[in-house]
Length: 447
Ligand code: GLU
Image (cartoon, rainbow, N blue to C red):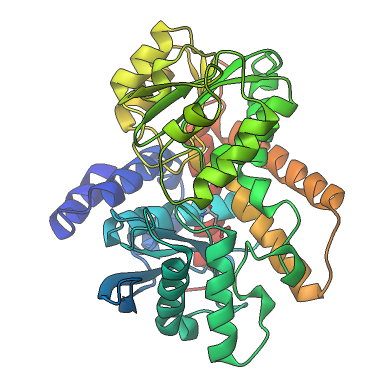
C-alpha cells in the first residue's frame, strides 16, 4: 500500500471532501509501514475497503418554525464500519455540516471506538440545521422531524447515535421520545447520552472532558510532568469544554481561557465553579456567544472580540470546539507564549501543519481520537447498563472510565514509542485502532 496512490485515487473521486481527505491521509501515513509488513492486509484490500463507509443515509427533514414558516434541512447517517461492533457515534447539528464532515468524523470514530477496548463500530450523523437562535420548541420540532426519517435505520444492536456538537441531553430526549413513539418499543439502548431517570449513565455528560483530562494526566506523567498548578487554555464553552474545565480545576490546574465563535474570555484568576455552571446556561441559551461570560462576571472574565483561546499564555492547550480550529500560526503563538503541551479534545481540532509544528518543536501532542475517546467509551458503558437493565454508581463509571483512558494511553505508548524513547501519539493511536479493526475485517472475510 502506498499512501500517495490511495490518496490520489480518493482525491480524484471526492475532490471537494477536504476534511475527509485530511483525516484519511493522516491515518494512512501513520499506518503505512506497519500495514506493509502484513501482506494478508494488502491481499484482502483492507485499506481500500476501510476508507469507504458501509452505507450513507441522506434524507430531507422538514419542520415548521415559530413563525409558522416551513423549513427544510438535510439529515444524514453514515454507517462507517461495523467490524468490531454495532455502528456507534454521535449526531452533529451545525450549519456547516456536509457529507465530507460526517465522513471524516465517521472514519475517525471507527479508530477511536476501537481504542476504547469496547466492541463498537464507527458511525456519525447529523444535519445542517443551525441551533443558534432557535427556541426550545423549534429544537424539539426539528429533532422529531429528524427522527421520523432516522428511526428505522438504528437499533440497540444495529446503530446507536449519541450527541456531538449541537446535540446534548435536551436533543437526545426529544429524539428518543419520537423514536419510542415510532418503534413502539422501549429500546433504551438505541441512543446514548439519555437523561438520568430513563437509562442515561451517570457521568456521560462529563465523560469526554473528564476522560481527556485523565489521558492528559497519563501523558504528562509519562513525560515526567504534572498538571497541578499549570495554566490551561481551552476553546469552546459547550459540553466538552465544560467537562474539561471541571476536571482540570479539580486536578489543581488553572483554566485561564475559554472561547467562542465571537472571541475569547481571559480569566486571569482561573475559572470558578460559578463560571463552570454558567457555561451550561450559555449552552442552553443557543446564543453561541462567549461574551456572555464576561457580561455575567465583569472584571473576572475579560472578553476580546475576534481572538482565539490560543492567544492567551498557557502551559497546556486543550482545543475543545471544532475541527481545524488550531492553525500553524496558532501553534507558533502558543509556543512563543510558553505552551509546551497540546491535547486535542475536539475531533481533528488541529490542522496538519500545527501538529507538524508541535511534533518538531518539542511540544507534547496527542490526537483527538485518543484524548476524547472517554465520551464514546462512557456511551459504551451506558449501552452495557441498558442491556443489563441496571445502573452503576458514579464511582463505578468513573473507575471504568479511568481504566479505559489508561488503557488507551498504554496502546498509544505500545505502538507509538520512537527509537529515541519519545512517544508519537498520532502514530500510536492510529496504528492501535487500525490493527484491531483490520484484524476483525480479515477474519470476517470479503464482505
Ligand atoms: N460525539 C462523540 C464523539 O465524537 C460521542 C459519540 C458517542 O457517544 O457515541 O466521540
